[in-house]
Image (cartoon, rainbow, N blue to C red; front, side, top):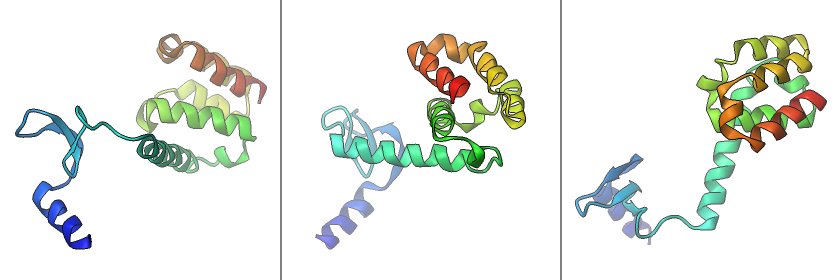
Length: 133
C-alpha cells in the first residue's frame, strides 16, 4: 500500500487549493474530486480540529489570551476561526479594549462591526461570551 500511495502522490501531485482537473472537476489535495466524492464526516472533523487549533495557536501569541477565562478564549477563537487572524487584527479598538481588560467596550466594538451584521446569531453568542465571560 505504501508503494501505491507513493505512486499516487507522484502522479497526482499535491495542490493545497482547489483547481479544475483535466476532466473539469473541482479537485484538491492529491486528486480528490470534490464535486463527485466530496469529503467524509471524519475528514471534515479532522479539518475542523486542525483549523480550530490554528485559531487558538494564533491567539496564543497575544499576552492577554492566556489570561482569559475559557468562555472568552472560546469567543475570540471562534472569531479568528471565522474571520482569519488578518481580518481579526483589524478590530483595533476591540483589541485595545481586550488588552485593558475592558470587555464591555470590547463587546461594543465587536457589535459595532460589519462582521456582527453579517454573521447574525453567531455574533450575538460570541459577543455575549465576550461581555459576560
